[in-house]
Image 1 (cartoon, rainbow, N blue to C red):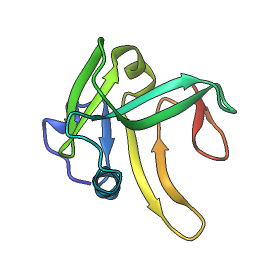
Image 2: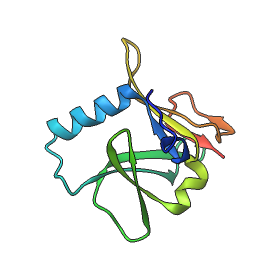
Image 3: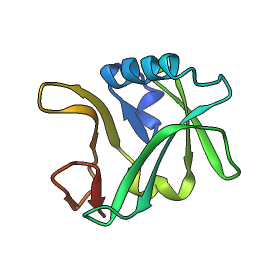
Image 4: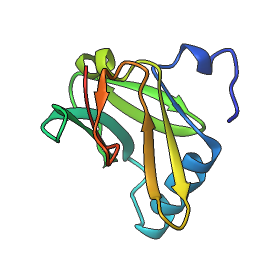
Length: 117
């Protein structure tokens, strides 16, 4: 993972493999230039909250960041749950997809896509 002094102040980090996967998805899905990567949480999932990750337009109340060269938006209220999280891309035989390493999670489910704080 590439980190600079400026990136250590960001609420979320993306591994190099996550950046490559997101750039590939942006290209394959022909995501328009005005869209950002939205990172967030929502109520639900086996452990109380589930992660949101997808491309979206900027909405009122969003905070903007550039993480690993990718423009990112996040609602300020979600930062409480996501501060310090690392998003990785796994490409193995048994696991393929985004993985969330959340230091704030008190519990996570077996699938790794939900947590409690």
